[in-house]
Every structure is written in structure tokens, then in C-alpha cells.
Length: 298
Image 1 (cartoon, rainbow, N blue to C red):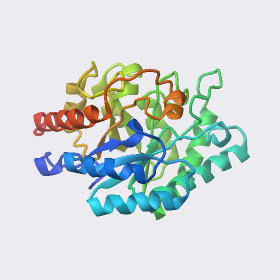
Image 2 (cartoon, rainbow, N blue to C red):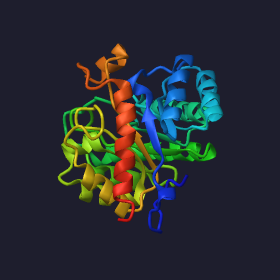
Image 3 (spheres, helix red, strand yellow):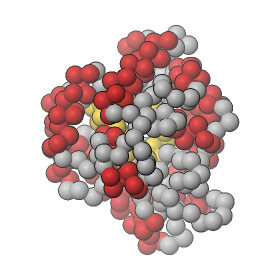
Image 4 (tube, rainbow, N blue to C red):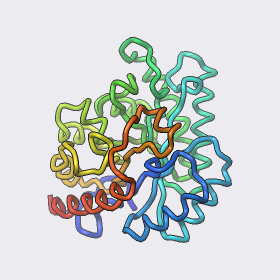
């Protein structure tokens, strides 16, 4: 799999691999996820995405071994809190941020993952009550560069994520995220595009995707309500057409949420159910494959 854009026309063999984020069930990895991975493989997924926290490395190793037996690839997602904020004025807090990211890289490596995505450029849902400052981008970029150097040893690409204004203030748009990634200036620090957040923050999806395309290495396919992709009002034709035009061949991973994991749901303000997990997985996969085929020759 190539995380970089291809210069040749996209063919069936070059379609982006399709992943499914396990957060629709739980944020905690355990052997209980093995049967879910089995079924995702049977349905036709290329990989799964798992949340990384501070569980023992052996948990990720065991799950990764199961994925390898199935022939599934893996990616990961993580966040940082205010005590490990890479954009903090405090050097000790930034150091905690770097240590946390190194721990996440160790766990992802144990699982055999190729990508760690998420809004780890700054603390989730933590606000300064002012617009983002140049020094905050600089501090965050320095931490990301150091984390990228560590990730390089594990052959992992870090893809920080822009979030909507209600969950983040440092990076809401692809323009801001592109600026941060350029400041980080490391080949293992790239970017991701999430359709849910872009739906709130970007004027036009094609412009946003073209802005981030030079450093784009991961995409979250996520409906406006976090339910089944294709059931809502995300501009999907614009999304898939532009990704195809840009010859994007990295992951397209479905990220959807439910209240199955109450603590996680409460932490991200998910207060109701959208669709059943297997409805999201089965119909979402069909939708992505149909859209990839539709724009295969763009």
C-alpha cells in the first residue's frame, strides 16, 4: 500500500484500501474485538482502525497478531489531553505530549499499524479563548517533528487531524493543518482529511482536498451525523471525485459513533444512536466501493 499520491491513472487495483474504525463498538481493545475483526474481514474490509490509549503493549501485540492471521492491515487513532498538550507554553507539558506520542507509536508498532491519526497536535476540547497563535503552531510542530523522527524508526506515518471549532481551536481547516504539517517538516508527519469536520469548517470540499493533497495520507469517511456513510448530506460526489483527481491511494476509513461505549460516547458528546454498527459497516463498505468505482477514471 502506498500512502503517497500516485502519478498514474487510478485503476481497480489502485483503489484506496478501506478500513473500519472500532470506536463504533468501544475505545478499549480486548479479545472481545477478535470476532468483530473476523466479520469485518468476511465482509470485505482491508483493515481496521483501533483507538490507542495507555493499555499494556501486549494488548496491541495480541490484537495485531490476530489481524495478521486474518490478513487484515491496521491503523490507529489517538488524542492527547491538556496534561500532554504539544502546543502548551509549558516545556514539561510538551515533553509529556512527546512521551505520550512515543508510547502510542510503540503500541501501534506492536500491532503492526502503518498510520496513527487523530487531533494530537493539541489537547482535545481544550481552548485558550483566543485565536491560534504563531507560537502555538511552532511548539506543536516541534513536538510533531520529534514524534515523526521516532515514528520513522517504526515505519509509521503520523497524520494529525483538523477538528471542528467545538472540539479544537488550533486546526479547524485544511489550510491551518497544511501550515502545521509544513512547519513540522518531517516525512513521517503528514495529514488526514475527515469529512465530518470538513462539513462544518470548509467552504468547498474540492478546494479543501486540493489544499491538503500534497501532504494527505489518511481519510476518514464520516457522515454529517456520524452514522452510515451515504445516508446524510456530506458532498460525497465532490469528495470522491476530488480524491480520485488527486490520485489519492491512502486509506479510506469509516469513522462512525454510537453509545455502545458509554464513557467514550460521553467524552465526545454522542448522546443518541445513529445507526447500528453492522448497518454502518456493511452499507458503508458498499457505498465506498460504489463511489470508488464511479470515479475510477477521473
